[in-house]
View 1 (cartoon, rainbow, N blue to C red):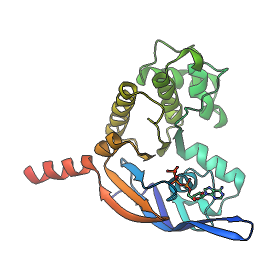
View 2: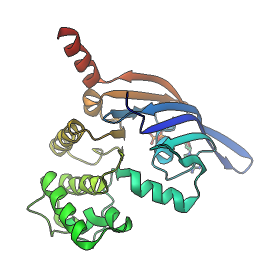
View 3: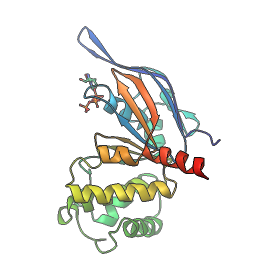
View 4: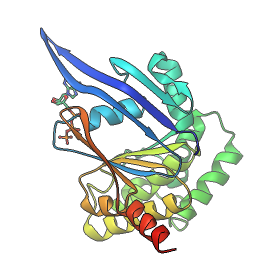
Length: 241
Ligand SMILES: Nc1ncnc2c1ncn2[C@@H]1O[C@H](COP(=O)(O)OP(=O)(O)OP(=O)(O)O)[C@@H](O)[C@H]1O
C-alpha cells in the first residue's frame, strides 16, 4: 500500500478564554492515502473547522503529531509552516477568496507566484488549468464579471496550480445554486478520477454520496470513519468480478 499523504496522531486543540480552557479536538488520529476523496462531517461546533485549520497548516495543534508528506508539521515555526502549506496543499473556500483586482489567469497564478515560479511557467500552467475547469473563454475576466460557479472554478484551478499533495475545501458548494453546485461536484469527481486527493468539510449530502470515505466527528473525536458510496461501489464491483 502507498504511504499516507497525511498522518494525524492524537491531535488535540484547546482554546483558552480568560480562565476557561475549551478542549475542541480531543485526540484525533487518522491517515489519508493518495487518491482518497474524504468528507469530514459532524454537528455544528464539533471541531470540523478547527481540524481543517490544523490539516491546512493554518493553525498548530496544542499537542499531537501531524505528518504531511512525511514531515512533522506540528513542530514547524510560522515561516516553515507557510512554506509547507504552499508546497503541499491547495485550498478551496466557500466564499472563493479571489483577489478582485486580478484576472482569472492572475488569480490562478497566485500560489505559483508565492512558490517563486517564473512568469512564463505561471502563465502557461494558469491557462491550461483555466481550460481544464472550463474557463478557457474567460481568461482575462475579473471575479466580479463571473458567476459564483465560475468563481469557484477559478478557485479550484488556483488550488491545483502548485500540484499539491491534497486539496482541502470548506463547504465548497455552500454558496452555489443547485445547478452550479452539481457542476462543481462533477468537476471534483473528475479531479478525483484523475488521482487528486480531496479532503472536504461539508454538510452537502450530494458530496457524501460521491466521496470514498466519511469521517464523522463528534465532540472533538472521530465518532465514525466509514467508506463512502464510491468505495462501496468499488467493493461491490470487485465482489462481482
Ligand atoms: N479561535 C477560537 N477561540 C475560542 N474558541 C474557538 C475558536 N475557534 C473555535 N472555537 C470553539 O471551538 C468549537 C468548535 O468550533 P469549530 O468552528 O471547529 O466547529 P465546526 O464543527 O466547524 O462548527 P460549524 O459546523 O458550526 O462551522 C466551538 O465551540 C467554537 O466556539
